[in-house]
Image (cartoon, rainbow, N blue to C red; front, side, top):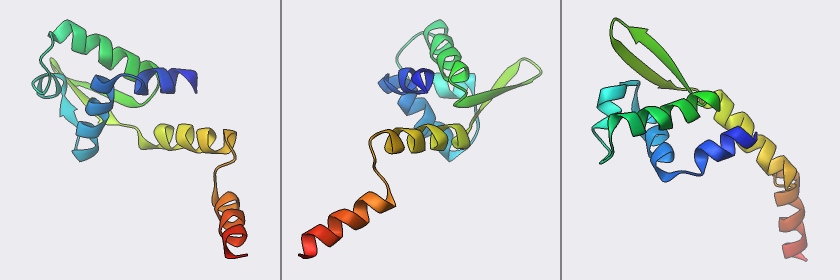
Length: 99
């Protein structure tokens, strides 16, 4: 889970995930959205791949990135459980507010 939160800590990587929510994109298409060098973007992609948040498929000389939502969902679920956030917690809060 630490690698996921390390990946999410950077605004550039969060923006990459946001873009990939729309549809899979090539490394070049993603890089065009940022004012940084392609090697810098490659480093961001590597962190996201290490966290298993994206997958890369090579088609010829082009790399297509795709979001892996299940990993992100699992990390967020684990995070909410860590702090006791969930349906049971909301129900208890509502019941307490009604009194």
